[in-house]
Image: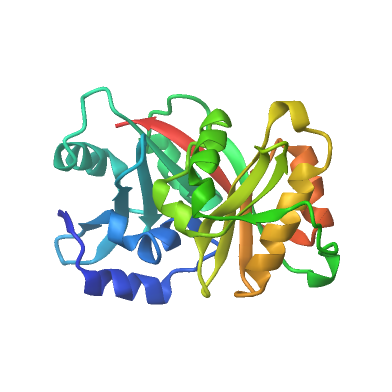
Length: 259
C-alpha cells in the first residue's frame, strides 16, 4: 500500500531519523517541509517500509528517499509518484542516496548515468577559521539580481529563490560580483553552506576560500552544526574545507534515474 503521509507521521520520522546519515531527507522533514510532499510504502499490516518525497518549485525533479526497511521497493513507488505528480513519461528524477541505500536501491533503479560519490562534511574545529577578511561583504536585497545572475552563470542546480532569504556574502570587483556564497539551510538547528562560486576569470586567487571562511564563521555563530557537500573527486575543494576545520562525516551518491 502506498499513501501520502500526515504531518503527525512526518513528526514521528523526524524524532527517529539520524540527520548525518540521511541528510537530504532530514531537510525535507525540517526547513523544506512546506515545499515537499511525502508518500510512504506500507505492508498490509500498516508497517512503514520506506518514504519517497518530492520537492516542488525547482527546475528539475527533486526527490528524497528514506528506506526504513530492506523490503522497501522503489519499482512500485516511482510509477505511483509519476502519476501523482503528473510527470511526463520520459521524466528523470534526482536524489541523493547514502551508501547503505545505494546498495539496497541501485538494483531497483535505472540510472541515467553512473552515480557520483558525494561527501558530507561537518565543521568541527573553530580554531581553524581564519581571521575576518574585509574584502568579503554581506550582500543585501539590492544585490538579489546580481546574486541570481552569478549563480545562473555558475549553473548552481540546487539553488531556489527561497534561499535568497538567507545571508549571502560576496567579493566585488569594480561593481561586479565576482565571488558569492550563501546557504541551502540557515537555522539554529543546523546550517548547510551552498550557492558558492567564483567567476572563471577570478579563480585561483583565494576568493572561494574567503567566501567559505565567512560563511562558516556566520554559520557557527548561530549553530554548532555546520555542514557542506562536496564531490569526492574534487580533491582541491576537500583540502580547502579541511584547512578550514571540516571533516567528512558521511559518503553519499548523487543519482539521476528514469522514473
